[in-house]
Length: 112
Length: 114
Image: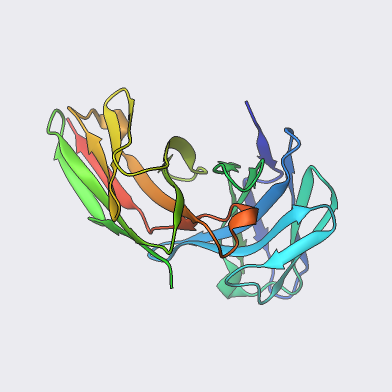
């Protein structure tokens, strides 16, 4: 089975800190995605990547950046964490443009 | 703009009481429709993919169906362990299609009580 591993289940960070969320997949998938999930708002796409060093903005990229230096790893960076970035962050990967995603287990980030 | 709407937002069923969840979509060209199950505090878990109107998929007590405008997730004789949030997502031709982007509904929170 494909595994998508997010490095932390829970994180607590202070306002203004630079935060790194890591995601690794083990099945050589081309596409990787970062979403945030908030009650009443559903899943919102932050950034996605279709190849190493390639990235595209999703619907809510403000305040975030990403890095994909290796195919298996896709990192989400909060440049200066703010309280409105408190959320559940979900990473996903997909082998191509025709099939669905495999999700990681999520990182619950709290910014205080 | 593409849109995925799920109803109801929440559903409470007694164990054994069958029902259906709805996912309606408006996309310019449907490549695939996906159903996921999400337990609290966890990532969504894949259930089904449907590609064309008339297609049906089954897994245990769950059956997914697809028409040109909507999909239903039928739950037959549910058990408490079926309690979860069920998410629907569509993948469209055209916009972002080569990247396989999914557009999600907000989900239906299902509670099955004994």
